[in-house]
Image (cartoon, rainbow, N blue to C red):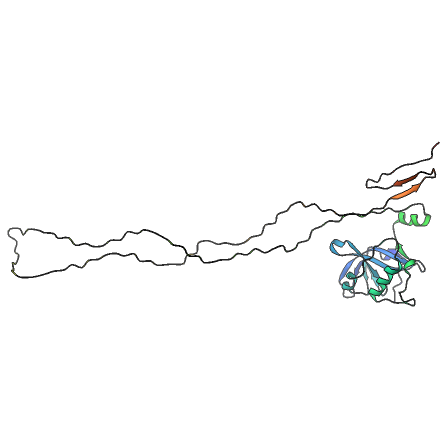
Length: 268
């Protein structure tokens, strides 16, 4: 059963949550049924940077303080057909929305008619334009640019083993034999023998000895550094221009990027 909202002021700027309590977004616009004057749909800002305006039905919804609890999960709302939130829904757009949300009525499309659905605004200037037909609201698109972080590559730090020849010089020593002759002094008591004899001396020499040890010499790590650069972004935007006829037969156009336009008046 659809909640009986008395006026659009009850809905404007409410925060929309799904049945599980997940936040979907804020109410941007309220759509009324021309036959009953009751709110039928609201649009909610969704998508990247809130740049998409998604239609959500009010069937089964209820308002509680500053929260609007709708009857459809957040995932279903995000997958709703994209429909421009302009001044009127056409038949095919509303059929697609009713079919997506599983809503049906006696006419096979739902509780409202596309040709009878329009935006309800709480802006006094907008209401005056519709009631008196003396003003038109000119709209234009503006770029909303932001950034998102994404993975662009990976850096790896790898340790490998290589072999190289190391040449160094160290001093080594060895013993050599030389013959030393000393005459026997007078008065020395030395036994004199005649016969064969021999003696020997042990020789020593140093030789290089090579050993290896593992020694930690440094730490190596990877660090990331954020570098900011200026990047130009461009896209096309649409804007509306107002054409007018001042009664002199000379058509004019008003409303450009600077807010200035042609001015024509009666000629005397």
